[in-house]
Image (cartoon, one colour):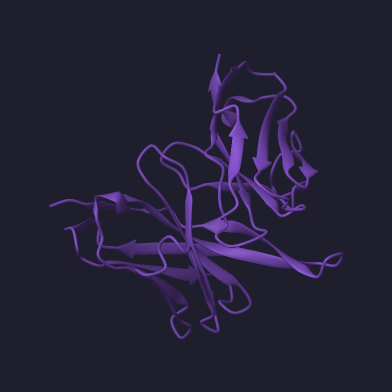
Length: 107
Length: 126
């Protein structure tokens, strides 16, 4: 299985901050990488697919980058509704594994 | 707009079989893959497996011996069965639509889950 490791596991930030979350794959996954946002008690929501493509309806303050083994999710100006947990997922091979999650909390 | 509605038994005893169904509304069932994902309490997401309208499946090897995903195209539904459950199978189970498109550079498919059910909490306890 391809192991996905996110860093940090949690972070504290303020509204308006620029936030970057990193996801590293245990082998090259080219650009087969998605990002999801999950609020407590809710299903995950797709933010980014194919490493850098913004899902329809997702605010442009979210952006994704990277290829190969190293990827980033950036929120350019954190908004109150962005405090949530974020997961990366590789779809290069099955099983389609997720990172352990990064919880973004209010400072 | 496509919606997924899922249901199934929420409380099981060890060794029983978990059974969940997900119905697809507002969209053709054909042409997509349909997935199951689970999340143990306080933990991350685990991909269980997927199926397409032809019945072609892919399973997580860690669960493969106990998992069956099936499809009923006449009802626009797909189902998950997980046998011989233990407390470790306690989780919220989600169904999702798995979109795919061909990467023209590598002739390889991108997959991403764009629509999710609300989740079903399944507890395994004696």
